[in-house]
Image (cartoon, rainbow, N blue to C red; front, side, top):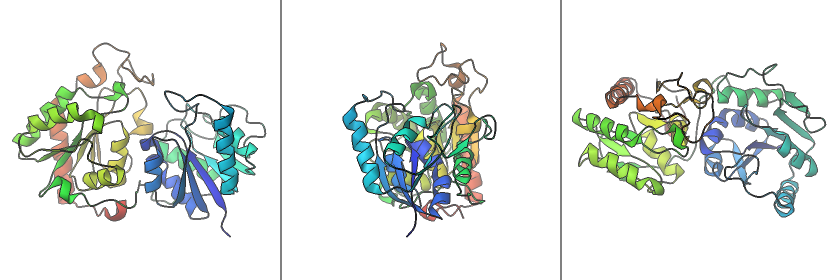
Length: 353
């Protein structure tokens, strides 16, 4: 009987997608149960190698954080015991600790736990990487996750590009012909390019003969409507129209995607689509830029907000992104789209061939 290994990544969609290569490494040797937070669960279900997804809202990860109650803790411990987990690999970013979850896993009877911890873990971790010592700090999140998995005994493949499975056919939504996707929203306001910039880029793309498809969540209809309206009558506004599988299909069919540092940027990478990344340096691009696809990284990476991890812009005028011109974005998108047309990528099942 194969071992049952819990792989935990408790934060958002993009973080879970970046864990994909590490998950595949574990899945080659064991049955993988993925533990995700509510914002990342749908992405966990799309990762190749995941047998089942367990969802739990961690009080030390989510913002706003749920209350810590004995009932919620007992519920997770019961679910972990019922799942008969043999061992666990806890994937975290540099600013997160694996120790709270490791404690709960110990209480659930998990015998072997791996993670990366700056703090002394005592008996909570059996396999420990020390960030800044035997785990470099400034590496892509994909490589960090793979390093944790490898330390636990699950070496990654040489090809660490992101992948997703069960990508939906989005042709009925996007219509006929080639297109470029603009995704103007972002869950964290400090990472958003002003919507006027997206509207300007949409107009320039339409004037160059490019068809524009605008994506966004249900609550972002005002943003997407403005961008689509500026792009003219042939633009398609898909706000609120896509679950994650369908959004993956929309992004897979695009020639390029224009998006901030937010989950759909990593979903685009997972289906092999080039990304114009409007990247606010509140977190380092070396860690969170789209991975494994052609990328045009725009934004002042030396702006005063650099490294602050701010959710709301701490600098008047939002200089890191406000200075990016729509023409610069449109030019980058067209360049990536032309390169993709010249060198097509097979994205069947989200894999890059």
